Length: 389
Image (tube, rainbow, N blue to C red):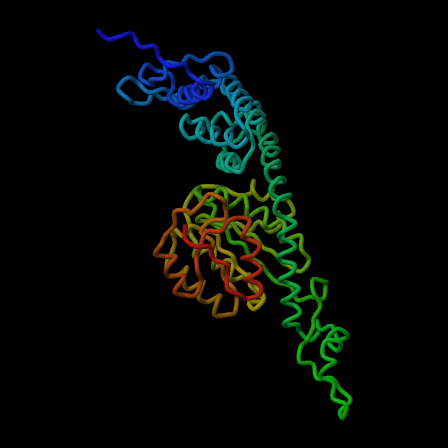
């Protein structure tokens, strides 16, 4: 006869583990926890279940559901902002848009007021730009403005400092005759004074830095606006506005799909730039590079940055010839497969290899690395290419 066995008492740590497993597994009979939820835990479970569903008895997932109306989705958005930190809310919002097809509801102002604004939401709003009713447009601009302002606060001062330093060093190393600071040049070369000739031999010329007399640099940002490049378009617009605010940098911003749009006149306001883009469509890199090449007037002082995944829908050989011609004329060409924090992107490896053979490495770049990339290009130093990830 088997004696009756009393299960050992559970500890608070055991209870917490069961609670967490119950929230992860979903509460069906098969989850094995035997745990019931109440209060806040039950509300969290309901919010997760509405999005991610529950497993059926045979192990298959049932789809979640938030209902078809904006009020029910807005309530759910309020719930998840109550129960989860901002970073988790942003992930759940993206999952809701992808899994449950909620993009259309973002065209309603009350929905936009309920969401947590982030760069991915901005990309979604820009893709809906042409379908957006006028009543929603100002709310959408306010959402985009919040994200853009946050990015500018994070990126602007460091960008100006790093690139400003590069411009200053470049001007001092290779000043043109009209840019030479003769007082500082003489002071720097006093050791080379020749008494018999009563003169100083200027081995090192010192030029003016970022002032109005500095030669400066021309920067052209050429940005692919196909759907997969949404985050890159947002970051490029912010960096374009920052560069345009620097006196010693002449900045041009060009976006393209199968057509080419020059948004330079809107650079004072990145939000205007973003609402001037049209995410989606095809890709004609050759046409975009031909347009940019035609705007280069000082090749030796020009840095062209192509931001694209290189899936060319135009003339491949033409794209490569444009790059070769710009490099041959003395311009610096930088190719970024993405300008974002999203990790290694999908890209056309054959085209990337062909560009590398021309001496132009193609690599993904995070926003934090972008100022160093631009500084190196302006000084014609090797680019800080990140290791493959």
